[in-house]
Length: 379
Image 1 (cartoon, rainbow, N blue to C red):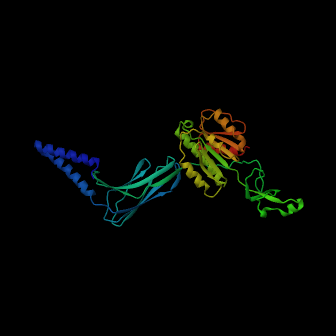
Image 2 (image 1 turned 60 degrees about the horizontal axis):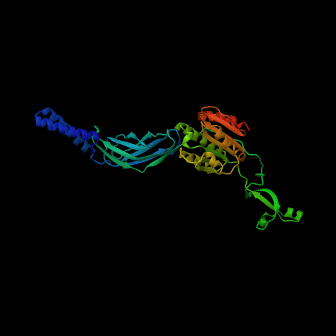
Image 3 (image 1 turned 90 degrees about the horizontal axis):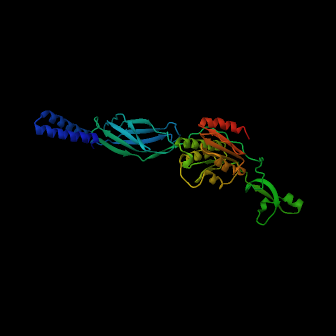
């Protein structure tokens, strides 16, 4: 079909030809005829249908924000020689144009092109549109190939060590009577009650005391790192600051997950991700943090903290405007966690940390990594 340029050329040429013919001027009529012939030739140029097999790949399928990712097209010509073919691949709200080299019959070409990775999130790629146009761009034939795919642009991270936490340590598990009952680790002896399994009876102690005694078993759990991200719009007047906050939360979570410790990530709306220290935890956390957005809500991030179980480390990622009131709400839950750290993103002015709360101000991920190393040496 004709492009807007083609329609304009055809309409203008027709008027020019009509005016030259009516007024008796052969030169305008000749130019008009040439324009009409060019438009007709463009349609004939694109009329034969190109038989192509096209396969698109995204490499890699997951990438950190700002890191390179490419689309790879494998194009095979199943018909006659194809010229003037251009690919246009949708990438998020925009599109990318890719020139396809001339393909002889049966020939195959592989073409790569860069995908935009400057913004975090799920970037839809496709559908792929192949356009065949004449040299003057007066006519164009478009055909879609393949289904849309998704490039996952995840938060940037820097290596952060796991913060030491925990109040009591034992080689055989927790020493507190409040530890959850389980079947993993021996903790203590207690008197038999109806319903206890006979295999848990400790016969030597029962013979010595004259009372049936059973082993109390508990589940030896690792300290959990709880990462709380403030995601209400009022805390982030600058979008770039929120992106840095997500990067910081991802870095803290990734550091704990890499050490195979449980991680919990929250916003005011509730849990974003919760892992238990398995081999796939890092991928899960980064994938879930990819879709976190600034969103209005009635609850702050600390409201979410009050509804979760305590223990381990608490890391709160807040905006630079977080002052005494916000830090006070963090201090209010201090007793429920073994260690509490507040990360402020690009603060406008310094603030004093409440007792028992460690405060870190940073302006970029490199600054966070330096401050985190110093933090790890302080208890």
